[in-house]
Image (tube, rainbow, N blue to C red):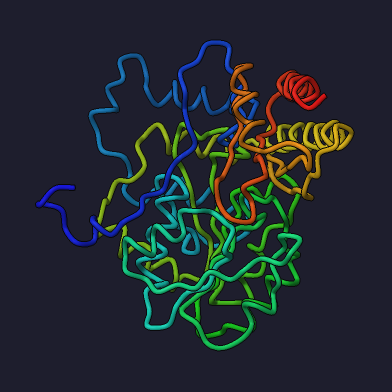
Length: 356
């Protein structure tokens, strides 16, 4: 700790990203990356943008990302003025916390959810209250429909549990909080849920966040977006243009447009992950694991006779890594990304050896 640090930095507990180890022949099932490559159209668009000599890279990208906003707007049948884009959904969320969730009353989110939420609260000095999940790790909508608050943010499907909140429950929460922003973080919605984006037409306090990192296989390109009422989007633009007017580079912009427009590839890739998830769930259930219902590209599982940390270490010895959260209530669970079918089979075989 340096004497030059501000008090804010001294008080921070930073987010810990998933490990990115450099291990040969690794089966990497810890950071929820898509097992499929991105659409071939993405690569073609990036090559075209580069040209023969890459000369366009000397030019700044479009600061307002109009072509990408238009592509997203077409995909979801909204107006471009209802779309905000940023450098991954983490940056989009950071701007949301600053622009829309910093009020006198505390914001609400589950006690077990995406661990970046409390980090943003610490960074921006936002009051918050962690609401306990139910015993089955589901979100109880009643917990978010009570007294006035500074806002609500819910990951749906939730992370790391993978549990899905029905669309009717989301609308109920939005309706119950007319004077606060309700943010639905849909990083994993394409793997088994129904997006709340259509609800933004009826609720001017509802903001829905997406990423291209998961279902579009573009974690390495860093593109995220939010859709909501133009007044909410304007607030985000004001923060963005006070922070970084060029958050997306030229290659990310054209690659993201191509990914959004290739609907057939997107749907096929999502269905592949869903099918693999159901097969892996069945295999682990046969091995005695308890697996929570998942609508994401991962599963959350525990074995009643085996310690989760020891399972994770035994898998690592076999060059397979999964995510283990050493947090109350979930310390006996492993979060396992749905990899390729071959990777899922290798994982199940390894766990059969370890637990047998």
